[in-house]
Image 1 (cartoon, rainbow, N blue to C red):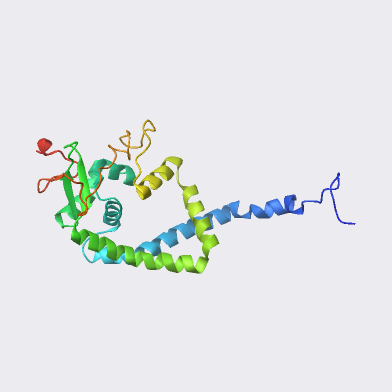
Image 2 (image 1 turned 135 degrees about the vertical axis):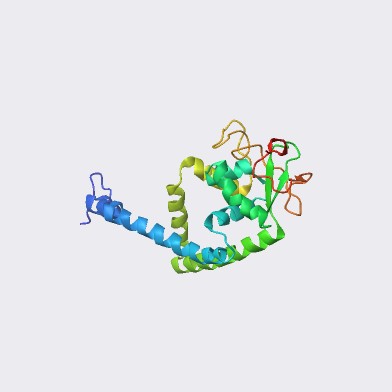
Length: 229
């Protein structure tokens, strides 16, 4: 006679304590430390190729982050970039200045708010960012193919789980370019749109916000022309 529960319902054996224990083996300390190892070594090798390319021209990983996000959203404001990178204005200045002086990033003054600095990649910047992307693209494609669709979906879920709720929303806004709902507040700087300022203005075909004027040569990131000393 088949096993059953009172009332004639079949027993649900997968809900026994033994099965539940097996389901949570990955929460043991050693498994969690192994996960830390995987994150470290995976990120190290993922960035290695791009790091080597950048080192050849005197740049590094921090510069790559700026190239990536400005390339993703031409016309990004300095305030928005500060919120994405979660660094101080001084730290961003040290990273952004060599990119501007090297001809990879250009700044423009906002049309609606002349205090804003709108960032976009130059032709040289777009070419460099593309080369870096292609190098890392090969690594991601290889990993995705080896792991399979189910693992890729699981990877995305785990990465989202590692993020704070506010960061998940920021990732979504970076990917889609959608403004933050009015009244939702922000991270660094707050206000409608991406944290740090108003919603990003539309971008023209050349990758620069229409109507924006070029920033003065040598202007510091986020600096209003009238405040230079």
